[in-house]
Amino acid sequence: MRPLTEEETKVLFQKLAEYIGRSIEKLINRSDERHCFRLAAKDRVYYVSESVMKASTSVARDNLLSFGTCLGKFSKSGKFRLHITALDYLAQYAQYKVWVKPSAEMSFLYGNNVLKSGLARITESTPQYAGVVVYSMSDIPLGFGVAGQSTDACKDLEPTGNVVLHQADIGEYLRGMEDDIF
Image: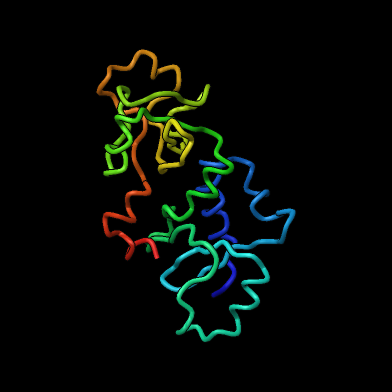
C-alpha cells in the first residue's frame, strides 16, 4: 500500500466531486479521526483511518487482503471507477439525489437505468450528467449513476426516457460481481 500520487489524487477527487462536491474535505478532516486514501493491490483505492493504516503496516503485503473501505480502482488508462462499496460515503454527502418508486426499485437493482415512469422525486436544479445517488422512497441508498436529464428537462420527458444512467447498485452483491468489487 502506498499514498496516492498527485495525479492519482487529482483524478480521484474529480470523480468524488461529481457526487459529493466540496464535501471531499469532510472525508479527510473528520472530527473523530483523520482518514486518508491509499492505493493497494490491483490499483484499488482504500479510504482508511490513520490508526488502521498504521496497524496494517505490521501485516505482510501478501497476507493483507483489504483494509478500510474500497472506494474504487484505477483503470489501465488512468481513469478512476467508483465501486458500490463507496455508496455509504456518497450517500452521506450527496449533492444530487433521486428517489425511485417502489415499482422501479427492482429494475434499478437488476442494473437498468431509471426511467421517468419510475421517478418519484429528484433534487431541485440537478444538472444533466451530474453524479446522483439513487434512493428508495424509504431513504435507503440503492446505488448511484449519472443524471441523464436535468431537473427541468425531466418535467417534459416521455415516460420511457432515461432519468438516471445506471453505474452501480447494491444488487451487485447478489449478482455475483464481488470479484470486481474487492
